[in-house]
Amino acid sequence: MKLQQLRYLVEIARQGLNVSEAAEALHTSQPGISKQVRLLEDELGITVFERSGKRLTGITEPGKAVLEISGRILREAENLKRVGDEYAGEDAGSLNIATTHTQARYALPEVVSRFLERWPRVRLTLHQGNPTQIAEWALSGEADIAIATESLDQYPALITLPCHQWVHAVIAPAGHPITEEKSLSLAALAKWPLVTYDAAFSGRSRINRAFERAGLNPNVVLSAIDADVIKTYVNLGLGLGIIARMAYDPQRDAGLVALDAEHLFGSNTTRLGLRRGSYLRRYEYDFIELFAPHLTHKAVDMVLVGGGEEYQL
Image 1 (spheres, helix red, strand yellow):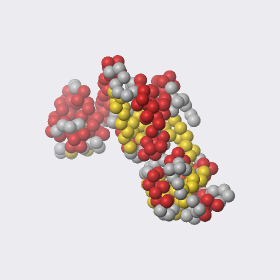
Image 2 (cartoon, helix red, strand yellow):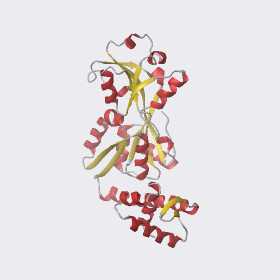
Image 3 (cartoon, rainbow, N blue to C red):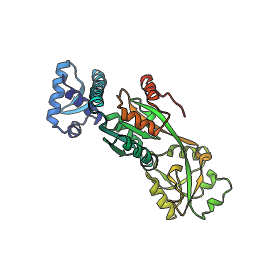
Image 4 (cartoon, one colour):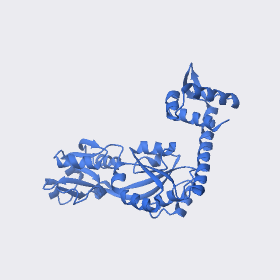
């Protein structure tokens, strides 16, 4: 039994039983993977994958157990390497952060700047995607830390920690009639075309629920993943924008007015996700604390050992 064989099993399952895509992801050949899987099945005396001709069609019951154990073994092997890197590599290494555009553009710049001042020999990479992609990158090990508002807490294989709360704002061109409203309401917003986040991003589910509870059908004429795109189209007069309040800057966004919308949509929680069983290096603890000061080394360890959330914001 070899670790590489276990990697093949796990990658095949991750790629939806597509051996060709697994081979491409692992930079090897399809026949080589198929041969090694067969050899491992013969050694274990069980069939891991159900087959129809040359196609894999499912995972057997014993195969599910093998895959679960294989995943744990691979994670622990990775942790062993990280322990070695921690003590042999001193203050060098790499850190991959998966997050949304809004977090990367508005919440992380100061954190990243301070982190790189402290850890100049660490290669930091930001991967931007939607919350589902972010969670999957963390689960696969492509990302060390995931940061998003949506979805992360829906993955049992991730431990999530609440970091910050933030609210939405409505943005409008200066002089727009909505700015004369004494108290902004959902009914008033529903009268105008709206530009806001894509359904998977930045608290969009909370926006949708607010209108649904009020029995209103908002006229969303454009959805985007990027607050800067939303502001561009609001400036063009396409409609009113609903964005994260942190994405509005009075100086940078001259010509636009931001109206508080916390009373309409409530607050949202940005969460940080870590794959269960991960070994964190010192600079990873430091990055987490820079982003969310209440998540100290000790606090994070308490959650990792406990296997669930420890803090509520």
